[in-house]
Image (tube, rainbow over all chains, first blue to last red; front, top):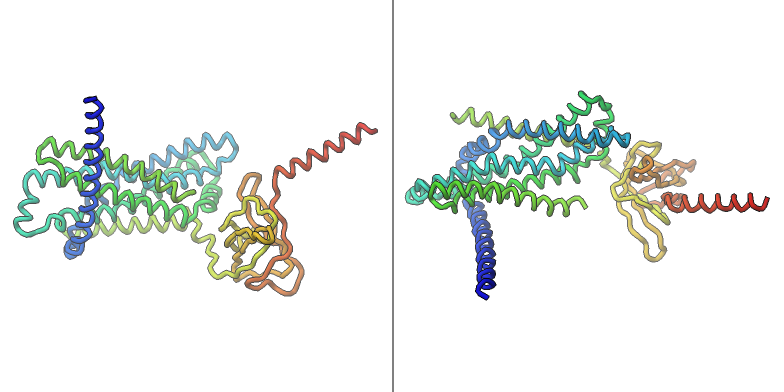
Length: 261
Length: 158
């Protein structure tokens, strides 16, 4: 009997804490929106964060996109070749990248590359009481620290995902056309005939915006609620990656089922 | 890092994003190839549209001249009403044939317009009278089987 009660108590506690976490996350979002106008007055803060989350992520994004595109080209070619339709490789690479891999892999890399940095930075600021010091000086930490990072993430993520898709397609082109020797014209014309701007490219961009929002907000929230200890910050960083990755994959399924039916 | 250099890098980053989007829209997607802007709408009745979908291509001699607007079922006359948006640059005679064909053996279906000989052209809201339904593969096969079965019977009589 006690065991059963314990089980329900644990279940209830975990449900309550995850719900309240979601609630505080939403509150953080509204606070960020409210303080955004203050932070836009000093837009160079946001630009600095775009440089950090966006420009410095370019290398990892471009390199991994090129390799993902090359692997898609190789694997797709071997399968399509069996059915004598290796010209469809362009469609396969482009649709896979634009619809799914571009936004999702970018979001996963983004969570690992930029999200962790945001969490660790804010967590350490909290540990060293920089946030409290700002409040003492009547500077809102949300306007000064949170909002610029939030908008930087929202702006960087779609740009990174678009660049990822483009470079990935070039990677697929490199393997399929330049190395294997699929016809150049068929590669592009089949792609253009089957990739729709509104249904595929714009929907992929919407996905990347949603993922950017999710990853950035989770990273900010985990940084702000991290216990002010070395262990707490490290745990929060781990949590950022785990929760962001799972939310991105889950949301991707939901968005896909809405968009491409 | 000083501010100017930072701005330059972020500017390059944003420009790269815009170039990537433009590239995807023009080179990868079909934003440029189907810029059917000014269109006029005609309709056609079909007994069976097969797998024809809204936004499918409307072709004349294989060239895309328009898009399918909407497809609805008329519950009173029991046929499908297909609205066809044709590019204003092209006009077709009133006795044009509208056929539903399949691109390749397993490809998607499109509407093919074959111009007739009438001197009056179709206007917006007009009806294309001559239509040919989509070919249903099962019907074709059953017809074929029926015919060949009949041939066998004939042979038995001989």
